[in-house]
Length: 390
Ligand code: ATP
Ligand code: MG
Image 1 (cartoon, rainbow, N blue to C red):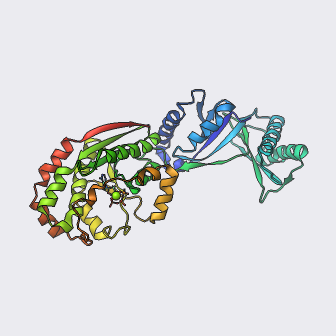
Image 2 (image 1 turned 30 degrees about the vertical axis):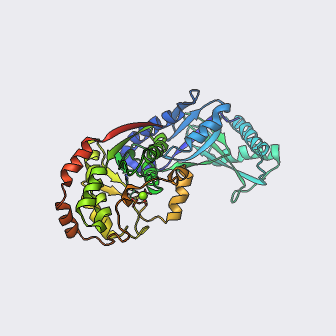
């Protein structure tokens, strides 16, 4: 029975001198992920991480680890002494176990990797010897080109092992290596997916939600908190700043042309989010904005909105089709929550035909009539921080 999980690093190998730091961040993320399984022990070597854990806990550990960013693939494995006889016997046991679990391969091959060059037998010889044991015990045919089962054998200075399964990892980079980003999180479908994708590229998230009581209610706020909580496990915990947006919305409603309302709300969000991000050590903002998903998401509008941000604005969904976003939302478990009814503050006091090609000058002129700077400063000062556990 496998009592070991081999973790293969994803793009870490690309990272040159940063590699050491990346491995440390990955390792601390692995530790946190495995905290509910105290028997699991993490080891490092041979350019990989290993997790040793009792066979009974292995499926649970594997399920948790397959969600950790920074891993390309994982294999349940059996640790074996680096001797040909022992490797052959372990390979036979692994193939028989795969068959007992329902796999019906007609052919196989052995793929050997000799990471410990002091091992006296080169890889092709390991393959031949171990393969001969499997043929003798199971009668399976050898197919080096298109085998239906691959038996992996690795001989390493730290650990030697045998495996037959390879589970896809979550890919991406370990959460934390790319710094912290502030996600503008609404109750919709897109922004939680955008947050997930930023985590996948190694960003730790803080989030900000703009709340407009009494127009948007306690249920909407609770929903956003739940969405934030679903993003938290990838990074341990997540701080959500809830900003009261009502005074800004009413000022815009009462003092600006109504077709500009959404643009003005969004420009205010960018100002407030930039200030919060800087206070909290975030390097960039992230949104669920897309190009052309709704009529108002034009390059002109996105530019006009972005102009008030003082940090880089990342939009990981910019080129997604809605169907692609929905599929990912389902996969990460936010879709059901996102599609529960809620009030969207951006649809407040908005006419049927909002501006779709905003130009900066009229928007700036309209803004000059409003005391937005003071209102934004108040909104920042009044932000309420909630810490959500993963
Ligand atoms: P979402 O599904 O994330 O709401 P959307 O496709 O509905 O996105 P918009 O409602 O136009 O698009 O919002 C664009 C982006 O602006 C959102 O993805 C989010 O990042 C940000 N945003 C909008 N409203 C809020 C809010 N109340 N609080 C925080 N961020 C918001
Ligand atoms: Mg929305």
